[in-house]
Image 1 (cartoon, rainbow, N blue to C red):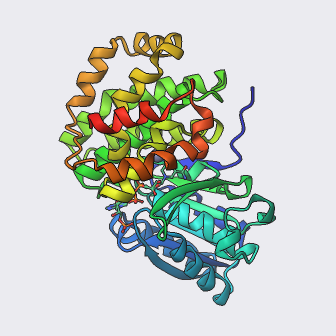
Image 2: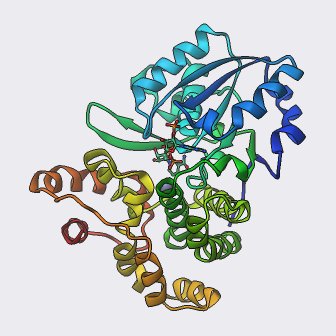
Length: 362
Ligand code: NAP
Ligand code: ZN
C-alpha cells in the first residue's frame, strides 16, 4: 500500500489573496498557460496579477489552449516558454490548460521534440508547475498526468511523470461559479468516473477508500442541487472537493476502460470528456460488478441506496449519445482502446467483443 501526493493543496475562500505569496519560491518569471477565456471568466486573472505584481514576479501569457489540447499547441507553448525565459508555469483552467501546462513544462525543461514527448527516459527535469483549477472535474491539479490529442491519428493518449505533479494547487470554488450548466454536469461526471475507477482499478488500495466514498457522496448529494442553482457557492465547494479527491485517487490508481472507451467518443464524435465517460458509466459498472462486488456494495451501503437507485440518479442527468456508431469507427477504434495503457488496470480481462457490445448499445 502506498499514499503519496507531493502537491501542496490550498482550498479556501480568496485562496490567492491569502496564500499567493508562496509562488515566490518557484521562480522569477511565470508562463501563464490557459484557455481562450477561462482565466478571465473565472476571475483568476483578476486575483492573480496583483499577487504577481506585489511580489515582483514577471509573467508572459500563453492563452491558446483548446479543449482536449493537441501536441502541436504544446510544442508552440514550449517555444513561448523558452523564448520568454520563463522559469515556472502557472496553469489556469480546466484539465485542458492544466495538462497543457504540465506537458509544456516537461517539453521545455528537457528541450524535447514531439517524437520524444512521451518517452519517460527523456523526462529528467521539469519547470515547477502551479495549478489553479476553474472546473471541478479532472483533478489534474493533484495528478502527475497529462492527456493530449495527436491530431494526425486523432487519438488521445496520456503520459505520467512524477515531475509533473504541481508544486501547489490553489483551489477556490468561486472560480467555478461562471461554469455553464453543461460544463458543470460533465466535469462532475468526470470526477465521479475517477472516484469509481479508484474502486475498479487493480491498483486500488485501502488508503483511498475514504476519498472515494466521501467524494462520490459529495457528488451524489450535491450535483442536482448545484445544477438547479449554479450560483450557490456551497454546492460548488462540494463539487470542487469531490473532484480534488478524484484526482488524489487516480494519481494512485490511474484510470481504466471507463476512460479508454470514452476517448474515441471525444475525438471522433466531439463529446466532452465528462460526457464521454457518462454515456458508458452504467455499462462499465455492470461489466466490472462481478469482480468488485464487495467494494461496490460497500459503496451503495455507504450511500444508503442500491445500484438501481444509483442508475436512476445517473439517468436524471440525461446524458445521451446522439450520434450513430459506424462500422469504420468500430474497426479503427476498438484496437486503439485495447492498446491503451489503462487496459492493464481493469479488474478483469476485457475482450474486443465486450467493447464492441458497449459501443453498439450506445
Ligand atoms: P476543459 O477542456 O479544460 O474546459 C472545458 C470548457 O470549459 C472550455 O471551453 C473552457 O474554456 C471552459 N471553462 C473552464 N473553466 C471555466 C470557467 N470557470 N468559467 C467558464 N468557462 C470555463 O475541461 P475539463 O473537463 O476540465 O478538462 C478536460 C481535459 O482534461 C481533457 O483533455 C481530459 O482528457 C483531461 N483530463 C486530465 C486528467 C489528468 O489527470 N490530467 C484527468 C481527467 C481528464 P477555455 O477554452 O477558455 O479554457
Ligand atoms: Zn477524466
